[in-house]
Length: 247
Image (cartoon, rainbow, N blue to C red; front, side, top):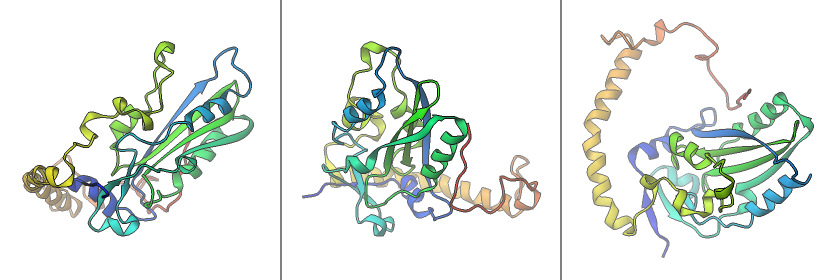
């Protein structure tokens, strides 16, 4: 029997509020130096090593139950056959790639919405950067892992003695403990989850009401500006689905 794990109201809201022009995934980009004395095919060897490890660590092996239709009453299901060819990918810039070329590639990768029929994360290994460098671009949906914990996942060690460990999708010891699943499944975890969500509703409603009043210019909070008061800048115009990344 497939095991189901409920989403919190906050995590579910990231799925319900998402549109084609406002995707709600987050991402991180890190650039590394190839070790001195390493062979020319270092990145290819690294990629082959990463692909050896199947996806087994929560929540990286969670998939939205029901795919896109599961956005209505979302819950996760644990799978043991995540497609590494989809989740772990290798790209190459025309050598020698600079910051502009890297930004253009990452812009395209980040603009694509997540596939809701698969676990909501992607790991991209990018080679071809000038000065013997390569990059890692990690993309994850906010409903699966929050922004702070996604940074923890990608925060690779600089200690050579501990650098030869399985990637984070295969090593449960590196998962943020607050996002690990319990052993009791849906029925055991549901009462506590509902209790927490019910207790949070009054403060959530007050916060939404306060924000809505400020947006309409009806609030009395000096720290919140209404829509009419916001200055016209490149940051508050209508946006499309494409993103531009620069470093």
